[in-house]
Length: 72
Image (tube, rainbow, N blue to C red; front, side):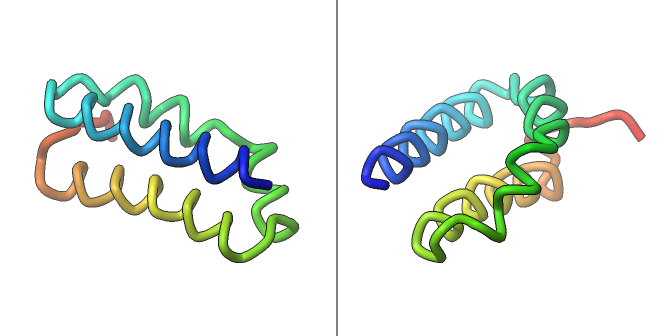
């Protein structure tokens, strides 16, 4: 499970870079299409689920602030 935390940290680092460079639009589409992740979310231990939710929250905040533009 430590690998999940490391991967989540890596993803968050990448998302931060994409947001800073204002090129996160495609990643938002990719993240939204992760149906398997959505199904597994409730089965993942809480501490790792939190890490995954932080990535989703980071994307939502960036969209709200206009750092990432997505089509309607």
